[in-house]
Image (cartoon, rainbow, N blue to C red; front, side, top):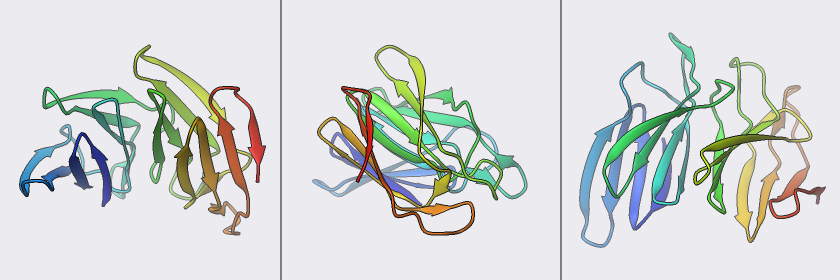
Length: 174
């Protein structure tokens, strides 16, 4: 299960079902992500009036590169594709861009890839973390994206905090 908030709605994704709650008046709605196998361990982010449901996997069907994009204003669902199919991808929104961070790309191997989707330009770019890892925490503060901790492919805890300054393009470690 994953959760995010956009335009006053709280989105709960579980499998291919998304439940929306408006906490102001306690109303609930539901919709189904695009057809196909159930996707578990997907990433979710809200940005610019849209909610992105990225990647995921299924023991029977493998990993997915699909991104379902829900437009809150129109109530419509569109799709994009990650360059690398993966599960456990973390997602953050910063300055009109969605960052799809790390994850598992074959259930047993982790990636350092950060795919960046620019909503306004409809373009993609890539960044790379210092190590392949999963289970890290992410945060956005000002113009910076923080990726902290996690577990590397040797199953060792990572003590790094990587900071990406989206204005200067520089990366630093804390």
